[in-house]
Length: 313
Image (cartoon, rainbow, N blue to C red; front, side):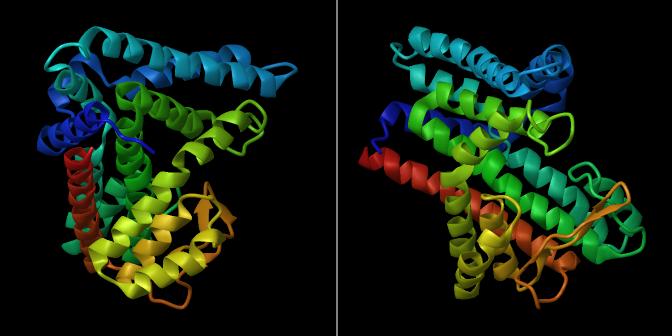
């Protein structure tokens, strides 16, 4: 893989801006967010095309339309701006909204703070913003577990994978990735409605997340400085229902010495999932705070790696 100084600059600038200011609420209220724009297009296509016969073909066409709608404006921006001396920096600023490092930190911290103070109801309300599973009203462990799993998986999907595709292909690369990832989150479910229409979106998302999920797991291992994290990741990652989420989740479980994944319930229906790091204890509030520390160190490490690659390119 040959990384150019231009695309590496785009990725690094985007990360630095996001870590510094995130996506401000005032901006969101005024123009919403690019992922929301993509989501509206997916919703419209889902309503109009997810019916009748040939749903796999219709879903494939929806993927093509959504990815093209995201990538073509990005290619135009590159064509217009890259010749400028400050072109990579301007493109980095345009890429910034598609990196979610600060947002993920804020959402998980919103669970960790009340959980640490014993406010289980507040933590339960906060975690409901990032996971859809059923959670008990008086038990901290399932809340900590859900938040840690979301933190681990979304470190890959929301931070490392976008940065990786930006480093490889600049703004068009990250735009394509976010389009695919949003397609998967909206229509890639194994449900009667989306079993066929969302099949290509789900498979494509598995493919584009494959390298980043492994890299994220390694970043967690390095941040924790834990041989146990590496052993658990290598042993248990393949047991997860997802071909990718198991890598960062197993690494996080091993780093903290807790068990993650496992059975969970959605709308009263229990889903039997295998444990990652089975036999370990359940996580608590302190583990969630430690997990946030591992996450933050991993984001810093990702920035350092991009910087080193930029110096060597």
